[in-house]
Image (tube, rainbow, N blue to C red; front, side, top):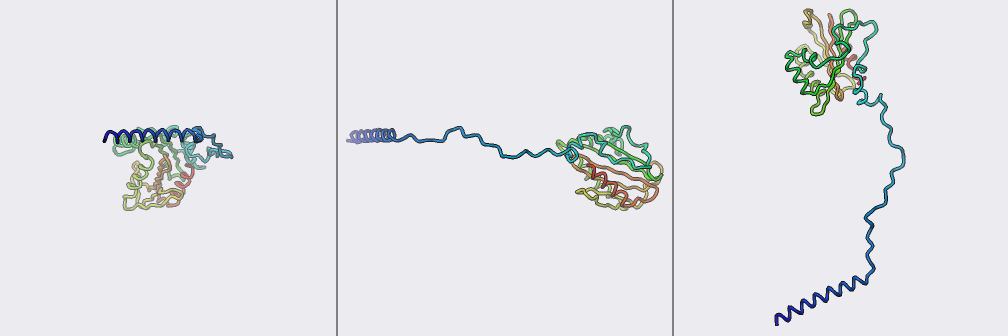
Length: 227
């Protein structure tokens, strides 16, 4: 008896499958969307024009970096301390650190690329030294790192006063109430440190009399406007 029931069940299943196949065969074939879709048309209108070189920072800073430096004012004398050709090498920059070997390694770590400089003497006693240090910035933000370090150390002396440089995020200029010893002479000093993109700005001013805030702030502002 069980084998008869099993056989009947199998015959029923086969009959159902056959009936389903016959019903499906009599139906109209289902129309599916084609695998290939029509080509989409591009939006109308012209593509945006590239920025002119004068407004493209990358074009400006990848060119001759010396062209971005301020020009020597009329009546001023070119400074003897400026590197020949307006470029400073990595070893030359490192020599100005208290520990040149440490400075060399630090600049290498920060991915130093190149440095341009200009300087002059005006009014008979005031000297100006401007530098633009550029970094590759593939792994670290060298321009930002050095600017932040400069802000920390320059602001340490008790007689330091700091002033914001207009048009910069965190650029600062510094003046000092007390004179410093420089090359065997006593001079007053002012500094400015700022960065934009991959370029770090350094400015030093020295004079036999105190340097007003306006002198260093305006100079730094005009230099940053060129970057």
